[in-house]
Image 1 (tube, one colour):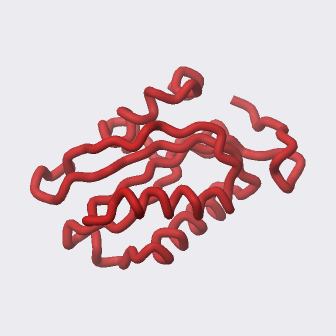
Image 2 (tube, one colour; image 1 turned 30 degrees about the horizontal axis):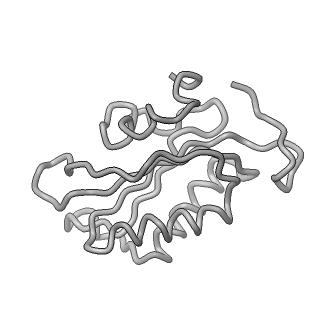
Length: 141
């Protein structure tokens, strides 16, 4: 996949990106909505999966709501990852949360341009269930 030129980014060329979102707190639907709103400041959103529920990988933590986003950003992969971590913090995530089994919001860049940043996600149903519903799925796989 090559970088695509679109008019809605601030730079001439923008990077296509795929992000995985998840939350397992009591107001998880609101956290997903807040994350999407915040991410729209970082990217031009082109397509999203529906919000869907998945079990935690370890089978003991609360159920998750997940969503997969596809869009374009002018940020490089390191800038995007840092910006996603900042959004997580703004929405209440603390470093010790995952170890406690509580995840207010998790935002993982999985693809940036034609590079897979997180091959691990390609083996997880919480990502693949949403990713497979996007029209760009077959381009990446």
